[in-house]
Length: 77
Image (cartoon, rainbow, N blue to C red; front, side, top):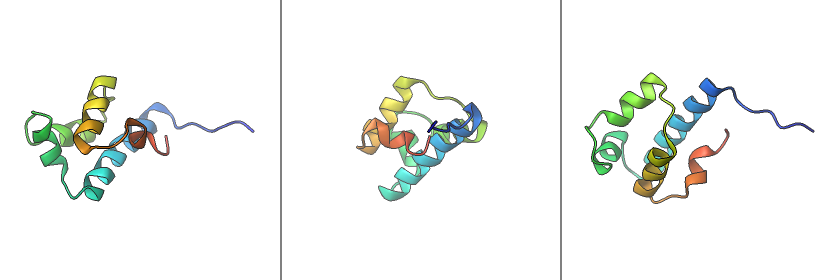
């Protein structure tokens, strides 16, 4: 049985949805996450709303800031 994958746009949206979900589960906000990453308060929000495909380094930094494994951010992709 062949595994179905999301298209690129759907995958990027799902990634950012996972970031927001993990922020909520960790009792934080994407604003606080942005600040923890040393960015402007609306940095993550802007990336999410623009559908920006994050680099591997950015993904690693987000996972570290949330104290989660990097694969958690790829759930459902």
